[in-house]
Image (cartoon, rainbow, N blue to C red; front, side, top):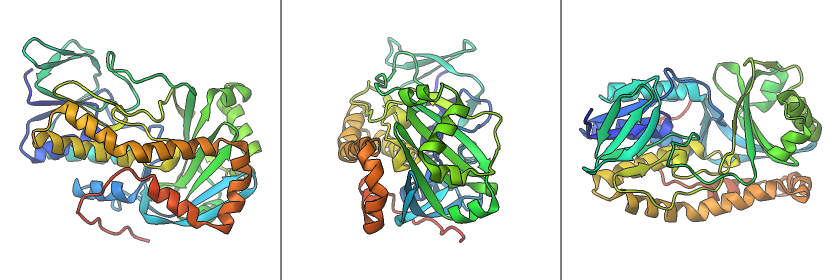
Length: 376
């Protein structure tokens, strides 16, 4: 099939790009391997920039049940420190968000093909991009947006992860007292080989998402139950949060080999790489969804403005480089034993440090559309 624009991947970045392009009158085909949206390994934190981008796309997160997040809390061992966030934020499950984005894409006129993956992407002799799907069908277009998230497309892989990170995600129903104590905060818990985040999401649930080095996972017996027990031993604050908690998934969702710090240097004509295929920031910043939306918005603006994909990719990398490097340095510091020991104490003395870090690791510039305030 001959198309004007093909977008591979129907996550946050792919949907955002498809909506923006369709509203500008472009003919867009979006190919998504999953038949329906599902839960994904994601901290599900929506920063101020993400909220503004979603509002510009017509997504009302408050009506979807998003929970306002006003504080960031850092916990290591038995110590914890809290500071107000320097921007509005919210929390919403990816399944709910992705469902709303797919619906908005369809409403905007995007042709959505779901339930089949892309087997290969090749350049044809007529300067077209040809996507061959698992069912044998093909789609050709002069312009393709690559938005496959954490999954690499053959031939367009990202560098291997030297730290061998392993990430897990579980939803819980915590005790009423712990839910009330967690309140409107996003908590970061620190361990010897990684960190985790716990925060409320819609329907009274709590999202716990963690990322650890494989060596730490190995010391826990390479099993989720052992890992959870080890994290609670290393951080009693987490053990307190999960006392009496009811897991809401049969087993945790997991993903491995996350190339934190990756930024795509260049690309080929007609191939715009967005989302995790453009850049992967350490999870503790909570900026993953914001980056997905930012890269999608930037790529659409570049395409509509006649800027080639290689030029766009190079400019995007240069613009994001300082904040990405700072986020990497901060993430490395979190895994340092001395830092874990003294950070909570220091932040009690100067909680503004968390606000400064949160502000400096933002990698996006928000659009000029003000979002509607969240209730509460």
